[in-house]
Image (tube, rainbow, N blue to C red; front, side, top):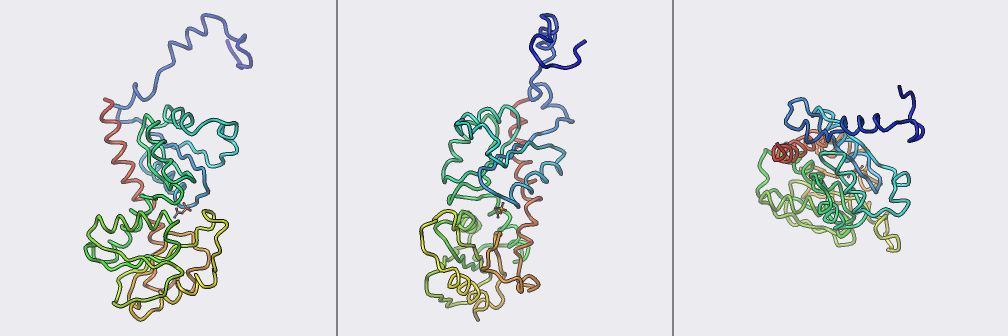
Length: 283
Ligand code: CP
């Protein structure tokens, strides 16, 4: 009998061999089984509320489970382990990985080093594709389920906003042609628009740049209340930091909490798609 395992000397040779015989890779053993529990790993090298928690809620809703690293100070990367090694190891524990990383493009290294599907949960000022899906879904629901030629103005700290980049790209895929309005540009809206998409200043990405937040917030306010935006849906990927007043929360045009709420169903769809493909290939 082994009561505790405190030293390798607590085991004899026979017990060690017996452990080896019992050890099986659960993925190769069980992934054809209907009761297989898929595991999501959330690796967040930057803060998050919506993305990480909705990914985790989504996998639970799908009948799966998650393992999570959100405080990188407690991970071995703080001892010098490379991102490549971290991913290689974690992809041996999970069936799918959602990664947020401060460096734009780092997600491609992550995918190259993973045995399992990877979802970009935001890479620096690069992309945030599942946020874009939430945004498109909320807009699609409120704009009559057809996004071709929908008129959208994307406002804010455009260069550094990954949510803006993916949303704009997503709109193009859906047949629309959004316009950008940088926070420091003159506010000009020549024609009525269907939606305004406000983003926050990405101060964590350009610490040294002077950004006049009073002017920024005023521009956002003026856009939302512009004559040509009076019927426009008001969107924001959140978190907000002053560019959208709480007074707008009860405005029927505001759909930013609908965007956030879409996080669970959309990420359920995304993970179902990727897991089906991945697990079917294994059997
Ligand atoms: N919109 C978004 O990505 O929010 P979090 O940073 O809270 O995940």
